[in-house]
Amino acid sequence: MKKFFIFMFLTIIPYVSGAQEMKQSEIDTVFGQGEENPYGEFFSGQTYLKRLSENDNIWNSSLANVTFEPGARTNWHKHSGGQILLVIGGEGRYQERGGKIRVLHKGDVVRIAPDIEHWHGASPNSWFTHISVETNLPNNTSTWLEPVNEQEYK
Amino acid sequence: MKKFFIFMFLTIIPYVSGAQEMKQSEIDTVFGQGEENPYGEFFSGQTYLKRLSENDNIWNSSLANVTFEPGARTNWHKHSGGQILLVIGGEGRYQERGGKIRVLHKGDVVRIAPDIEHWHGASPNSWFTHISVETNLPNNTSTWLEPVNEQEYK
Image (cartoon, rainbow over all chains, first blue to last red; front, side):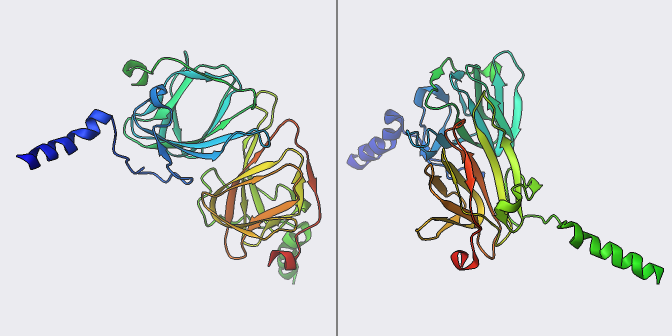
């Protein structure tokens, strides 16, 4: 009976703590999958971040490799200095407020102008990895908005 | 005899004009191999450039995928605003003036500070591809110096 309680306790920990199992990307991320869930509440689904260049006053450059599990995506958001996405692999989606969804594949480039509200993420059945380039640093602030709902995503 | 002269003429044209056959990269360049020999006299060996983001005053960002045939490399040079290299694949080399050669592989990141004299290129027996990120635009001017000689390269 004691063993049973220990078993139940160990089984229930991950659910109580909100921990999720780290999954291995099914596509070649080239620069690595990195750490889990870097953006917390501003993303839906499981995402991963591998920093390539931390912003500083020598290079003024923030570069990162972002990997999305199938169905994972950012909230709606905007960057005051803009952003460029370089697609490494998988199939993803990009949409600007009021525009159509653009389907993204390996080798695609997305240039997002300053203050344009948008979201990006994986397609429902594919992993997706892109490099993110924050532009016009040090003058670039991100503003996070509401999640992309199922109707917008589908 | 007439046929012989036509044959000789057609055979000699590529050498006289300096034209070289476009070779297909043996590694996955992810963003494409692009156009041949973009930097002319400032590079040794055959190189290829695929522009990803042309510099302009909206993003102030110059991004390109650069592919080197085995043995191909830049001259010594420097950038007044610095540069970051993101290695896509193959095996390459990077050296700062007075320093040791660093061997580069897929996933490596090289941050080159402003005004540091350096060169980069492929290893002798491998193709090599990296993304080039020019930093601190629009304040970044490149200065091209002498070729990397065989003694420095080996």
